[in-house]
Length: 338
Image 1 (tube, rainbow, N blue to C red):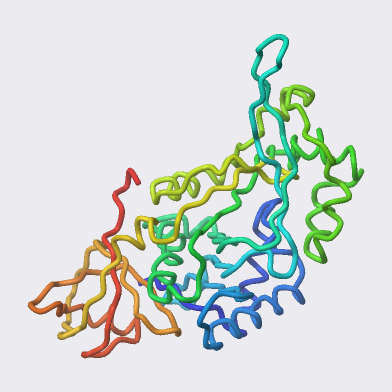
Image 2: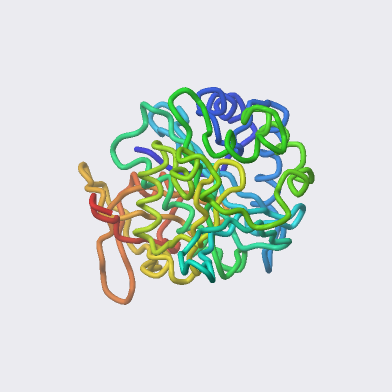
């Protein structure tokens, strides 16, 4: 049985291992033990702090194999973007030449001092990419938002990792950003971890015609990393759409959805557990969570009784730390096509 739970200080070694095995471009998993330790502390503080409205909370979750204790992945939610530093993008727009009437695409630098909630930092170890665990890791964040709605904004965004070649080359950075700051993309990621204050200095001050970029860079505008495609498809099926904005360095798309319109949040239901039963075999029809701040999510079955009461298996109850009389939230697992 696999569960999602908040990260703990004891998870640091596994968390660091995630960063070592992750590929280029996952800025939220830096190869820096001290920063990772601070991220864990920040998450613990966020979970333990009473919140009436979002401010600067960063919640980090891990996927755990309950049978072995091994951690297989991580994901996160930033309750509110841009509180400490603004976020920068290129906005993709279309203009018409007055003389030729030809449509041309331009990239306009934009900055948002305060932003919406962001889902981020999704990573799944290769040997855990099975049994729907990627879907569990991604969708668990929406169950947490549904259960603790006051902690999050009215809109949720995701910045999807841009296209990177098998040789770890970032064509969009090579063609544009590197002209302003002649460093490797790897070094750029390290700089972003320390501060984003340098970003305005390396963005053009005026709109840029995309036709001036090399074809290989143009092809990367709004394109995701090959390993990110399944995650992007899942979020599109949840109701997310492309905002028309891209990351200024790797060209990856920014997508968004109104929080209450996210499919998992819309379809999430709450019931009271009336029975806990020993069941030898379970299907994986539902994503089920407790409603506590000490959050847990797992796959399992929900059996419906009268008056909004339900029964669950003893395994599910143990994994979620649920007793008779407690409330659970649940949502039907999306089909394989989703």
